Image 1 (tube, helix red, strand yellow):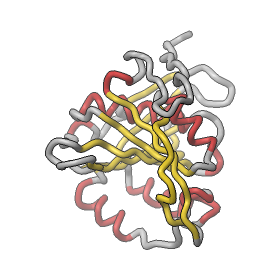
Image 2 (cartoon, helix red, strand yellow):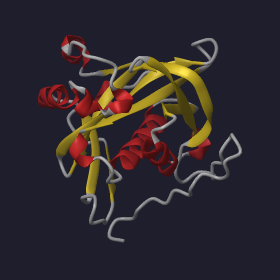
Image 3 (cartoon, one colour):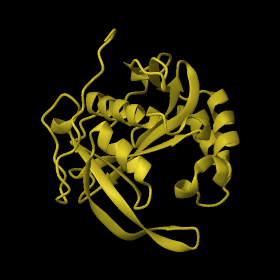
Length: 219
C-alpha cells in the first residue's frame, strides 16, 4: 500500500477546525521537519515525556534521523507526520504495516501517536488520530486501520473511540514494559466506518461506539 511522498510534502495535509476554549481552531498534520526532530528528541527522550505507557527505555535517535535524511519519514511501509496546533508542533502520528495473513492480501495499517506533555488531555489526540485515519483511507487502499493501547490507559481508549475506532478486545500479556507484561486493548476502523460512513459497533459486547460528527467551519 504505497503512500506517495508527493501527496504530503511542502504543505499541510489535513485540517479540522473546531471552536473550543480548550483547543485552538486548527489542528493540522504535516510532513516532519528537521526542527521537529529536535523537538521530538527533547520531549520524548525520557519517561516524563513519553508517559508511562510508551516508555520502553533509552534509545538512540540516530536511526530516525537517518530515515529522515533518506525519505523524510514517508515510505511505502509506513510514515510519520507532525501534529501541529495552530501551526506549532505538539507531537507526531505514525503508521506501519501489519499483516493478518499473507502480506500481499492481508495487510493493514497500525497507528500510533505521541503528544508533548503540555498539550495532553485537550482533545488533540482524538482529532489527530481521526485526521490520520481519513488521510490513510484517502491515499492508500487499506481496508482496515488498527491501534492498541495499554489496558490501563483509559484516556487513549476514549480518544480512539471518539475518533471513530471500535474496541475489538484485549490482547493478553502482549507488551513487555517496565519489568512485566501488560495487556493491550486493540481497536480498529474499517473503511466503511470512517467518520461520515456507517456507524461502528463494538466487537466485544461493549455497545455502540460514540457517533462522530465532523465540526463545520463557522459553526
